[in-house]
Image (cartoon, rainbow, N blue to C red; front, top):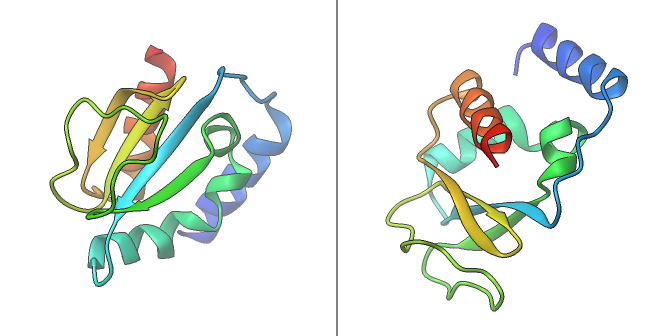
Length: 116
């Protein structure tokens, strides 16, 4: 993530109030060797918990071939990695398939969070 983007995200996260969404989480379905998962980790993983999005929808990581944890309901299984599944009260309300780059990721995640 560029230095300007990191600074902007940090500034926004410290100034704006955290929007509270009841029992909302973001599940990242990943697998070893996934270059797009690695790109997401490089670009976003360290800053994600500090953002409003990360505070409103904490990240949970699961492996592609692992069973979906009890209490989580996906509309359909993840077919490839990464797949980001937004859950509210344990049920899927949105999904991002693949990692489209940090700008698109933030925009898509913001749209999903705003729509709930």
